Length: 183
Image (cartoon, rainbow, N blue to C red):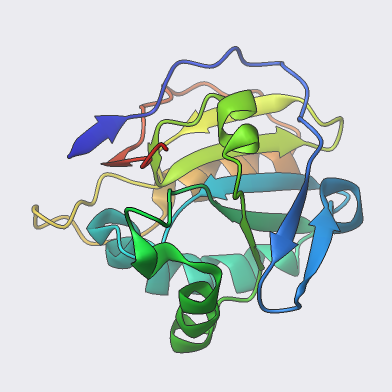
């Protein structure tokens, strides 16, 4: 079932968390993961066709923008009793398969997804160097069911504007994807 991201107030502050990183077998906090230019939080999961569709491009995108001082943090908040393919063990396989270069964390209680008002996968939040939400929207216009190539052009534009200290002058369109699988 597809869903759109919720409307979240721009300018709101990043919300702290500490979540389990299955690959490292330990918890990681937002503060230890944050980078100086800004941070992108992506609610995602292993089985969503929308995430799978853009993930190879997102991996290359992440490699490029991590070098520029941004970090991407993936968070899986799905109910693993109903969706065992999103379990931490499967997350490790997913990280290896796609060579994900960023932390991919498990939100077992779903508390972080609720605090962020996340609704779908992918659900993308961009915070500037002051930890203020400047973008909440889609990666680009590509979907598994359309012929639009995956480019990340909308997220790329946001990060490039941040790097150039330019004010945003473009619409923020909601992300569309699978609904988060709530307990």
